Image (cartoon, rainbow, N blue to C red; front, top):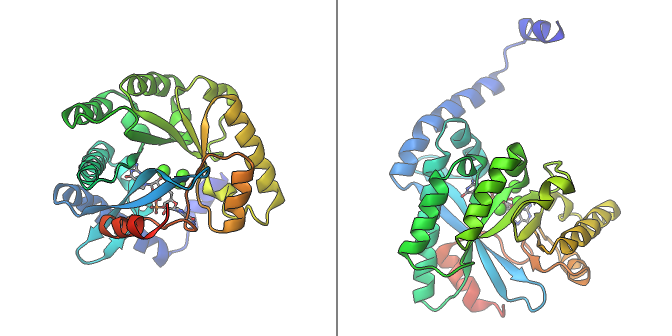
Length: 277
Ligand code: C2E
Ligand code: CA
Ligand code: CA
Ligand code: CA
């Protein structure tokens, strides 16, 4: 009843309308954007806290729109998911990231790459077979590519996800659970997943230096993950206090604006050359 009433009396909201138009616009042009290479990747390093060397670089997609400028992924990933374009999008990202990896290797940078994948990409073997064939085609070594999949995506259909993740692991991919702590999964659900790494969501990391309850959550996550033999990445580190605290707690890997923002490939190359890492 309440729902019906609410709808009946809903007042005209120009703000909502604007969003709807925007979404329709983006939905129609996303397909074209993927086909016409309007997407671009930014790169953000993950450092080993033990010696501050680079462990991986995460590829993060942006849409370089001819009129609207740089559109962040949060504005179009969910549209891609809802309109069945996630396979095409992730293939584009994977292909671009692997090409970048190969050209960095030729330049003498041996940095492994991390790619974000979605729930739709682990529902069947279509995407896994694509990334396996790319790996073989470029003769990439095992562990050259980490696939980051959100906790939420894995919990959606845990049995299917486990099967596909095992398949990817057998083919030499490193697997990471992204946004850990936001998907309300239980330890029992995660225990059977064939993953190597947990990424603690940035909402628990951003305010670590001042928030006592975040410290408790992060400390217990580290203990749990280490007992399960997983390495842990803390993402969203914005200050040195948080970084040093995480290091003292035995967290292995670190990522965040304090180290570097995500950067275009050429700026990232300069960053590597100008930092002691
Ligand atoms: P994510 O995978 O959790 O990536 C981390 C996000 O946090 C990135 O936002 C990054 O710019 C941001 N970030 C990194 N360090 C800090 C920090 O210290 N402080 C704060 N406040 N933020 C930080 P971005 O690039 O806008 O990406 C947002 C999300 O979009 C990603 O979250 C990921 O879920 C999704 N995404 C990005 N690229 C791809 C992609 O190629 N494929 C898929 N499926 N999803 C992607
Ligand atoms: Ca990620
Ligand atoms: Ca994350
Ligand atoms: Ca996220």
